[in-house]
Length: 277
Image 1 (cartoon, rainbow, N blue to C red):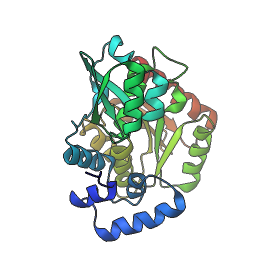
Image 2 (image 1 turned 30 degrees about the horizontal axis):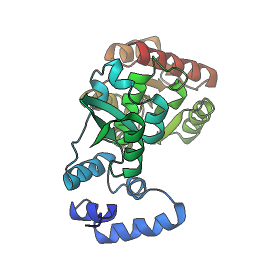
Image 3 (image 1 turned 180 degrees about the horizontal axis):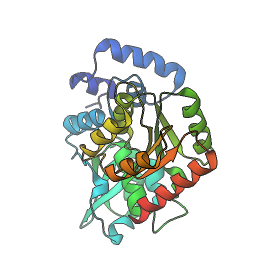
Image 4 (image 1 turned 30 degrees about the vertical axis):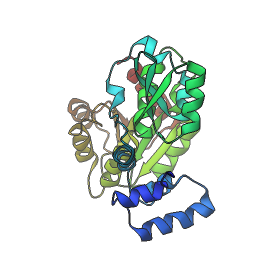
């Protein structure tokens, strides 16, 4: 029996309609990205929707929040950090000669065959979102392989409705090699946080639709997002404002206008805390 195309799987699971699929396939001809990524950028599906569809269609176990679990050094040693990053895979469990492997693309049979041959193990694929796998890699591999997993491979979400300030922060942090996601209001920021599971969020306090404090409270109420450190930055830079924000639970506070060197230093400090906290 021939394997169904990814678009057909999404249609069968009613995650998209035919018109959306045709539009995405048309875009794919010009921008040459995976179909799932295009649909995400079109705000039609989320990574988790895709993972659940694959799990339902093919019976793959769905591995969620894998970064929150503990894994023995012997399990982590089955897959190198370089391989995990390159292919977005993460070793979950070893039972006899079977390695249960979280995969962003569990349909990649070539990768499974190669790993099975190299390791002398049977690969049992489980599906997980790319963001969840990346977060697990960063947490569990970084201490033992610092060169392979450094801060610069981490994601940062910037939330600010002032375009100049947003661009200045993006420029300063992009120079350090970080992956940057941007939002112009709190509602959009929360949506991107759910989608990308960034390692750090930097938000202005004064925002349209949902302000920075409301955004922070929404993050804290979500078990998938509550561990993400959040730095507040705002033009209201009195000592009382800073005290209130830190007491509320923000990781740090930076006054506007943003000094690029100070911003880079605070971000690096936040990532050091992530590693050892």
